Image (tube, rainbow, N blue to C red; front, side, top):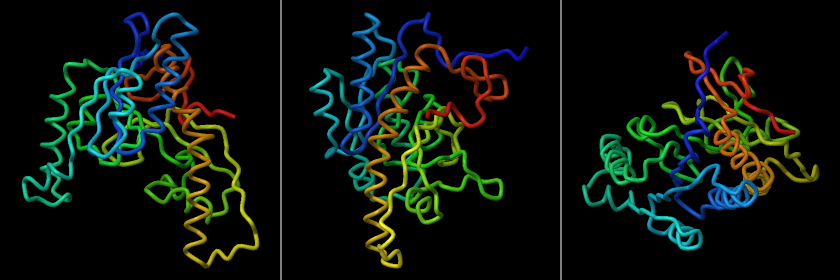
Length: 260
């Protein structure tokens, strides 16, 4: 039998998480609300957001920190680059920024980092420092010519234009290649609802329809699957073998756990 290693062993205590964010933190809020809900049900923490980190000073990180009584660290990445007179395309500076961030977060002794609306692409030091969990607004199990079909910033728009009848959020592990991480969970399907009288040759209409669906997907997909994934990790349901293949309750999940 293949030897499996739990992503988190609940016998060692609650799963400790760093929340990474850049904007409103709506996904992180839902994760925090689920944290409190589970504590009330179980009488103990299954997982715990031990700190919030923001790479922008204008995010709502401090508001979340105040509301949920969590330490907050803010390091504005735009200012970091400006102080050094460097372009955001300079990846060496990005690694320096991430290395300093890792040092700042080290005292919290977190096991996992959740990328909850974190808009900066993580460099290798940050990817390797924590097991990173991210949400992507598309079904990453769908492939074309052997490659994931709906990756990148315009995944919702591309899925709608390709004729998909429903959308899913994908919860995946952060890997060095963007949107190529191993799948943990797919959200319940969110139907694509389109007025057939709309002119899809108009870029503004396409943008509006895409934004409306992305907002629905966030509420009906992200907000369900992201907290649920963390709960299951904290309960010791997810494991991996020596090759990094993922399992749920000892069953292989090449396309993640699929919620219906």
